[in-house]
Image 1 (tube, rainbow, N blue to C red):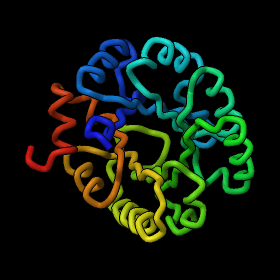
Image 2 (tube, helix red, strand yellow; image 1 turned 90 degrees about the vertical axis):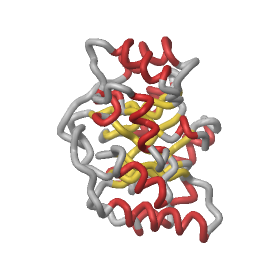
Image 3 (spheres, rainbow, N blue to C red; image 1 turned 90 degrees about the horizontal axis):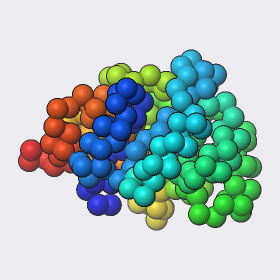
Image 4 (cartoon, rainbow, N blue to C red; image 1 turned 180 degrees about the horizontal axis):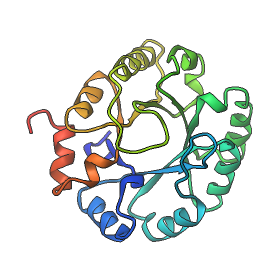
Length: 224
């Protein structure tokens, strides 16, 4: 992956009074993908945003930015179909509330062969539970904080999950990407990348930085 595709800023931590400014900053910093958290108040207690905001942002920015849609919702497969109508194509949903509904995957891929599907695991979920399913997904997202709120601290045990996923991918000649979401900064980010992660979702660290390009370089480059 190219350097600029490694970091996915989560707009959950953006300034919603000045979203256009934050999007301009992301583009200037070389960001290619933004992370769009959808929370319904059921799977997690908080409610974030949904289709209307996505439609507005996608129409304005889709030629410059890809949207990585993270569904922290009770009915992710229904929401995937709704976001597909608006232009979405990259989706991640949670293992914890879909393990008995994975038959939906085949029908989605048959209908929409171009989409990318990922599965996320929460901190309390043992990574071994999804190893047997890994070949069904384009990406696996390790939640390094409890889903549902920004600004949390990185959970150290997440590093071992990354290592196991990277080793399993190599040993079985698989190609899924490994992502990490939560508590990513210039210390935890390099550690995750060195362990085997391919992309990192960062919110507070990125949007609170006065120089966002330098902030990104501190994650990706060891010598900064």
